[in-house]
Amino acid sequence: MNFYRKIVQTTLFKITSLNSFSIVIKIGIGLVTSKILAVFVGPSGMALVGNLRNFLTSLENISTLGFQNGIVKYTAENEKSKSELQKIVSTVFITLMGIGLFLSCVLFFSAPYWNEKIFGNNTEYLIVFKVLSLVLPTYGLSIFFIAIINGLSRFKKVIAINIAGNIMGLLVSVFLILQFKTTGALMAIVVAPALLFFVTLYFVQKEIQFFQFIKLDAFDFKVLKNLSAYSLMALVSSFLGPIVLLAIRNNLIEKLGLEQAGFWESMTRISSYYLLFISTILTVYFLPKLSKAKDNAETKSIFWQFYKTILPVFCLGLIAIYFSRYFIIQLLFTKEFLPVTTLFFWQLIGDVFKVASLILGYQFFAKKLIKAFIISELFSLGALYFLSLFFVEYYGIEGVIMAQSIDNFLYLIVLIIYFRKILV
Image 1 (cartoon, rainbow, N blue to C red):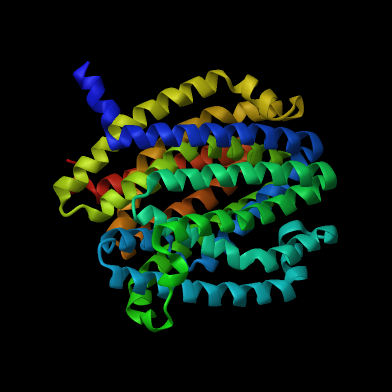
Image 2 (cartoon, rainbow, N blue to C red):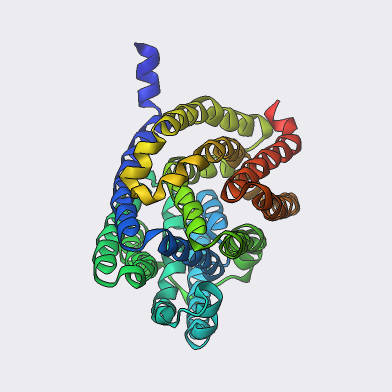
């Protein structure tokens, strides 16, 4: 009994339990949103939604200059130094405001070009990019605020923000999809993150009196220099990654049709639901700890804490998901999406490799290992792209999932070799 009592009293258990509640809410909301998407836009509309999501991911990372993980690291390290923290917050805020306004202007006047690149000749979706250009500055600031709260180790507030964002996203999505079908679904993806800005602003204001904290004379180019490494890392991963996925999806549309591409997007959507549990735990709990780790022994302890507690539970969950796949598809989508059930096996195998590598990958950000990160990411993205082209020719839509699984395995092997001295 004492053993279990000690487990229950640990910070990881408390954060995991609260995070699980948040994920359950998000998955429940995802069930509703996915069902509405399936009924009102179908597999073809789902493919367009996937294209826009990939574009937004790249745009978000440009608007934050890839600073997110760096902000978490330096906020965590300077939490007790008000002057240093003020330099970080003021410098990043002023920089992101400038970048956000610049990108908004560029996107507004180049909307027709991006509409053609993402949606082809469907000019009816041009309004989506016009609206996006207006709300874009709030994207970077929301991510910035969450990173500050995360760096201060206010885990419960980060999870509360996620819950509030999910609920707002549901309400906006349901209304817009019911009113405007595919256009509404695309518009919801653009508008929901903008609403999150007000939630994050409220929480960060309570935490550090944000408006009193911002000082023009606190702007420090040394902060930007320290964070520039994270910009380079994000450019390779979070910017190039979605572009590679967009290229793969466009290849699928060309070779197999819009509907098949929609099936892949549906499988990716399901995967993203259960991976939320892992990604949130890593961001709110493990990344700050890795950033503060003073030596290899402490880092090794954090790695193995993840492998002994989180990974086994995740694998058991995947087994349950595999045997429930027919139920999941009909619950989330419609019978029209039943071909997606053939994609589960390779997707789940690949996700085990992906999750096993995630904790190792976060060490790149925690210790700013720029060169190693860039080389490993370029290897992974290159392998994913060319493997997908090859396997699609022979195995159709299932070939993309096989390529992802093999790529995740190869990436894990690369990281194990690189971090072998810490792991053993």
